[in-house]
Amino acid sequence: MVPIVGKQLVILALWLALSTIVVVVFAWVVSSTRRPAPQGEVQPGGYRLRRLWGWFYGTLLVAAFLVTLWTVPYAWAQGSSAKPALVVHVYAHQFAFTMPQKLPAQTPIEFLVTSLDVNHDMGIYSPQGVLLGQVQAMPDYTNVFFFTFPAPGRYIIRCLELCGAGHSYMFQPLQVYQPASAAAPLARGV
Ligand SMILES: [Cu+2]
Image (tube, rainbow, N blue to C red; front, side):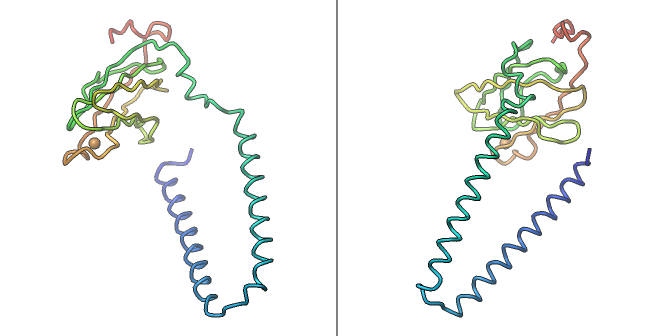
């Protein structure tokens, strides 16, 4: 697996390449407007190009739909249909999360997420720093969020919605442990 830093460099390189292309195209469009062409000459070509473009994207869209249809719902999201083994209440507030600090791995968990003050967002980050899932934490409303921690480790819960001056400090480590038995995760006294 490519390390996160490597992935970020690849994304940065792609972004720079695409940005360069966009800048070059804009520069070309700007320079081409200095040589105006009669509408009657360019219109048929423009319409032809537009039709081709429409067919190209239409075909791409249908193909992408057909190819990806078979993978929905994604395997990692199918926990939502599994009966949760554990219900966990999460209360977000400025600037912390009130919730258990230890949870079992490989156990379908139903998170009931709300906020005690303003809007927050609960983001679950893996020990490698990858965002695995997120859900809004809203005042006077409880969002239901199904999640299964794939493996033990030190996860981090971060707020992903700007909620005030202390927002960037709003995170909490979460120890995810291997349950003694996958069939009886509650035996560890969670
Ligand atoms: Cu926040």
